[in-house]
Image 1 (cartoon, one colour):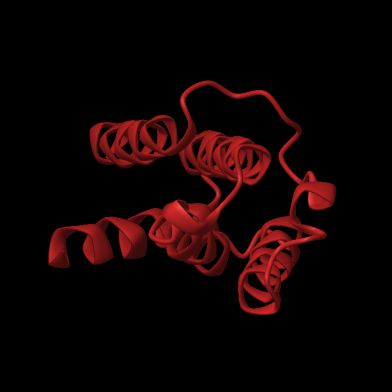
Image 2: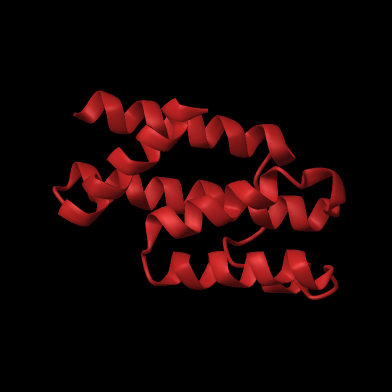
Length: 117
């Protein structure tokens, strides 16, 4: 099981690094998205709220939705997105390896979603 969680974590970290390079901002740097178009700000705000609620699947899905729109994001938005994606994946990995059943279930679901793409 640890390998599967590690594999998912490595994938998500790699995806985050491809988006913005290195981590520069705090995980929930909402200021970067204050000037974003409403449809992007709405996805960001929901992903951050899901992140804060430890709704791993919804948060990761939201962050990945934004990563798919990276050409429409500013450098500071990419930095904030990268930091948020890295942070939630680290928390998910840590919680799953500590035996958190919800985190394990979320990891399995996210891994299954990844395998479909």
